[in-house]
Length: 175
Image 1 (cartoon, rainbow, N blue to C red):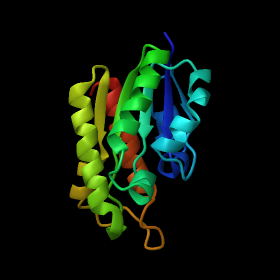
Image 2: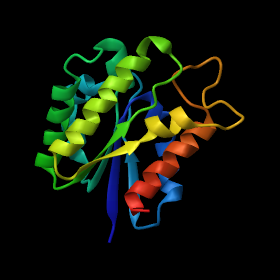
Image 3: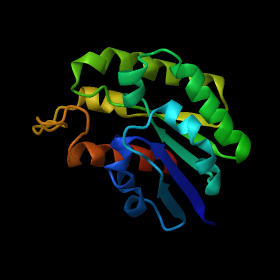
Image 4: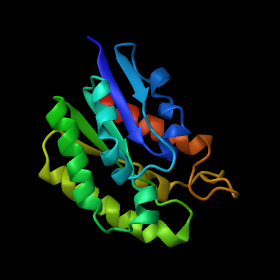
């Protein structure tokens, strides 16, 4: 049985090469990454018809950094719920919401934290929705090499992307 995964995200996902999931998951999974740098939940809602083009059983929503920068917490919950409803109404599917890392950009850290709390609340309200807690793993990371390069406080280095990919892999495989 072929299981189709589609990643809907922003530059964090786009620059990760699908979080390496094509290589990390067994061959019965196929991964499509539709992520677009700079996109927020609002941008995806405006371009939602693009999402219906690919049959999908599992959606990974990796969104929130651009929302935090552009909208703060304003409307994040309603936009996310509208996007989830669209995805689940158009296809019988499961949605993973990413509790995104707070980044090293101090001006949006608190907003991301609050938006991640909103995602946790959405999980409790919706069936066939779960979260992937990247935030906690990044916040408690104790490695010698920082997860963010000095020149880029938003996009993690390869170690950070590897951590994210492993979190998604384990969640998808139920391990």
